[in-house]
Length: 148
Figure (spheres, rainbow, N blue to C red):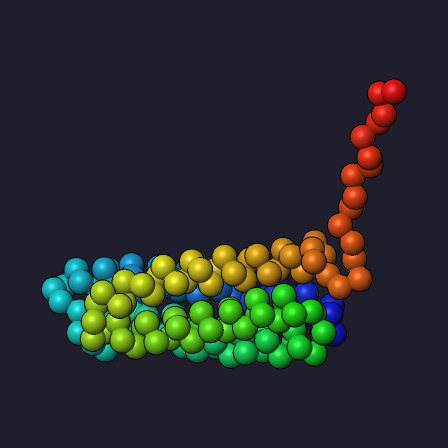
């Protein structure tokens, strides 16, 4: 189960990066569509459709990350880290929903995306490096040489 958890983290990291790319696509597609004047709501939704739909898929991926961490018995720090990622993903969806009504809240949406990217990247690297794993010890430096 631990191996599945490790590989899943790489998949989730790739999904988050792809999601950020979909946001960029949506923004530039909307800009491209303004060549003829204004963009209506349908055109906007068409441009950001991949980003919106994929965001919900990543939210489910965050839940799967928590479940896999529990099943893999990854240890309390990794389980908590997985929970933080899932909470950040829930916040991300809420920021998007409320951002349409209150743009200042929407401005936090891309900032939270960077937090998600960092959190997933950090957990992935910790897991693959084996940092803080149960049953492992940190290397101990040898005692200093005696000068006497």
